[in-house]
Length: 96
Image 1 (cartoon, rainbow, N blue to C red):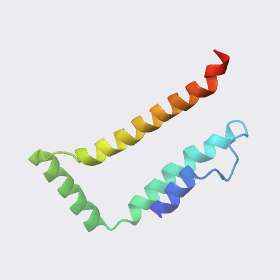
Image 2: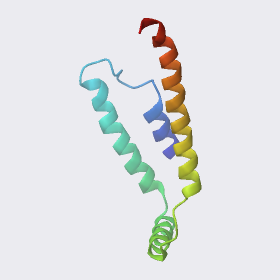
Image 3: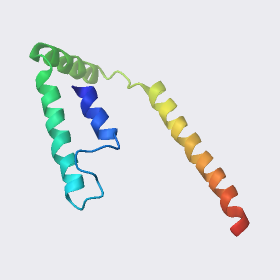
């Protein structure tokens, strides 16, 4: 269910197309929160409680967050930003 909600959120295909004024975005504002609520309700309560306890314990212990993953994501964004700047500069250079 969670995969369906994420897929709908990132899909260019909507029940009501976004180019229709107001209604195009209202369906996203209604369907996505409802899908998230349904996905949370489908998680068994013991599993949800166990995960919440593990999260609280990890925060209370002061364990570091996953800096490696954060650094990789930051590096990817930085490389992409630099690539866009360089490519954009080359495209705009003849006009400047």
